[in-house]
Length: 307
Ligand code: TUI
Image 1 (spheres, rainbow, N blue to C red):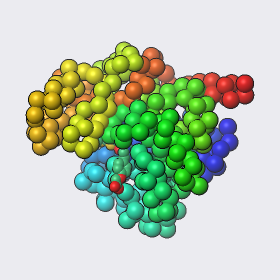
Image 2 (image 1 turned 90 degrees about the horizontal axis):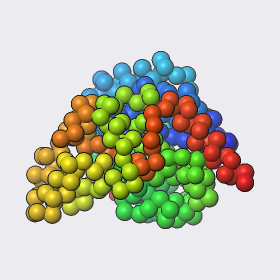
Image 3 (image 1 turned 45 degrees about the vertical axis):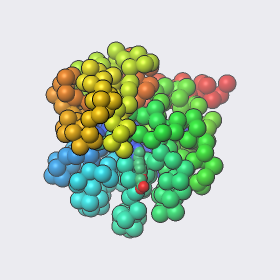
Image 4 (image 1 turned 180 degrees about the vertical axis):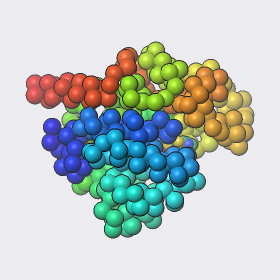
């Protein structure tokens, strides 16, 4: 399936794995890249030396292109922006901010730059700043989200920019891919379905929560902090919502949730972890190798698009 995204990135299928903090490490990234998509390593909150190892490990596991996601709110964003240059990473996606100040150096290093954005205004700003493509991320996504749905955001972003658009949020099967193309996207970013990839190293409690989730089992917490976050509706997540309703402060909220992504992904701590996932978790029902996920999704999409 050839699109501007497969051409831009030199990959077989126009699919990017989400840059999920504490989840997206080299084993998963390499498996997705080996399957013909673009795997990502998340550069969220980990120490820089760990990320250097992850990048090198990914290179040892695949000779295909892969990328690093830089969460711009994280304290190590500046260092990581340099690390991707030093380590010759071919693609960078960014989230949770404006990567403008890094773009010149990344361009000079030949890195393809793909910011994740939740609105048309930000998409236009990123295109002007030199982005090679844009990921339009709807509110159905897991993690830190904007307000606009994928269905509304993708066609508006596709109309507003001339670089290729990648749809994200609520895509977990071939129907989601076909629908994204109908909305004007030339690729998709998928996170939640890859949580259930065999090669995904998260704790089995996390995988089970995702596999068992039904349609109404994701909720958004932390709206009042300015950083709303979608994840599995566990007792802990519900307690965060009550905390917010009962007048807790954003500062106290940050304290309670500090380290909760790690507690979920690494420790499988159901009482204190934030198990981020998208609203499409209800569609994810089994653990499969990444290659099977990618091939199944595109097999379905091609059938639908050829109808
Ligand atoms: O970044 C994400 N998803 C994430 S990041 C994350 S870790 C986290 N840590 C602490 C608090 C919250 C989350 C978990 N999930 N997605 C991409 C994304 N980017 N969503 C929204 C944005 C965004 C927001 C504002 C992009 C640009 C932006 O620009 C603001 C400006 O004015 O420049």
